Length: 400
Image (cartoon, rainbow, N blue to C red; front, side):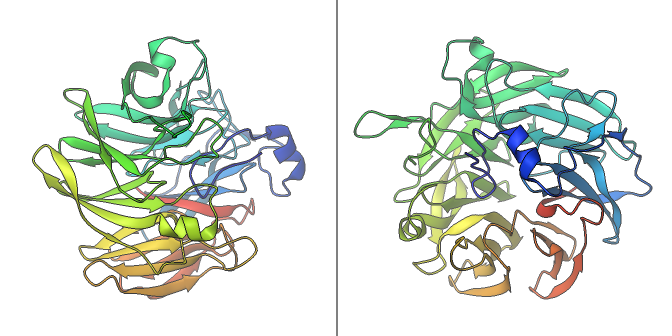
């Protein structure tokens, strides 16, 4: 069973079946030797994927495609011991414009460190040798490089550095330290709902970590919460978000202001997901954060992951479609009034992904229509084709 994309995690995916069923799989055919250096300065990286194979497209300062396949599931290069799977993501925020970090998630569980523009693979760090760690995000604070690991290690193998469901410190290509967030909870029947750290946002001397809070089989979702972490002291505290769930996505607008996107129970019915979906604004208070307000878009439309902070009072979010009903919609939300307006309607569900801002533009990946370029006012300016060679849909964009 494949569980990915919408909720930013994957489980029990069969790579061999994926190759057999993927018409555009760049990892199931001939390999590509090496990574060709970029001919210009990269401004954006775009993940293209059909969840069987992946390719990373690189976009220049003028929105011109430098390459639609900088590194792919078929790439063979020195230092790249594990080829990209079909389930890769990029960090929430780029730590450096001269480095591309690629997080290969459930089943591959490595972090690739690729130099820009040369394409040299500096390191490929395993983050779950004794189990499937399922890395979700990478962030840098206090000069330290940390990764969130979504999957708990349900066996006793591996020791303290292999417990999962944690944050891990990477140094010199290895995991040096594990930091537990103590964010697990239980159902009334006693079943454990693991914290499952997801995306992270650095806000001054604190890191706010989104928590998906799911059972071992992903079927049950726990109450909404985030963890507020003091990396310096290695201490953390759980901040509950009452009546919400699926709160794994976080974005920092400033050191004093963080947004949390809650998408509801992973496998709940539409109404249940909508009731537990919201954009939550957190503000700094002392050594932690407190909830200032929350915003929804109606009562019958749940959110999908894809929050973009456009300006101090405006966020864009993807209103989730349904496979047998409405398509995804990109919605602009005014935080002061709660008013919303639709900016773009996709052609299907599960097609709009995580976007990014750069300068006076907003970039949103659309798996059916390429990379959409908007003004910050919401006007669609152009569509950029990022899949000329491989035909894979745009899923995520990162401003470098």
